Image (cartoon, rainbow, N blue to C red; front, side, top):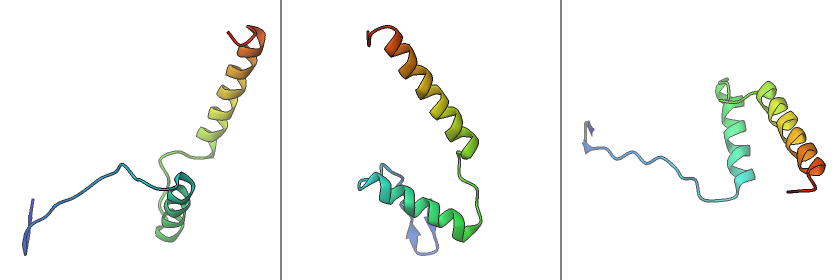
Length: 64
């Protein structure tokens, strides 16, 4: 891709650094720009329910 001053290079991830800091910066950007994140609270709740189910099954099987 070329811009008005010549070739343009775009770099995308991976993001190296503290995962919490990366998430906090992304959260801040969504708040400031009024955009919606790719995953929402409902997605998070489903993830937690899935993890709870996985843990319950592991306990039932003795962790095997």
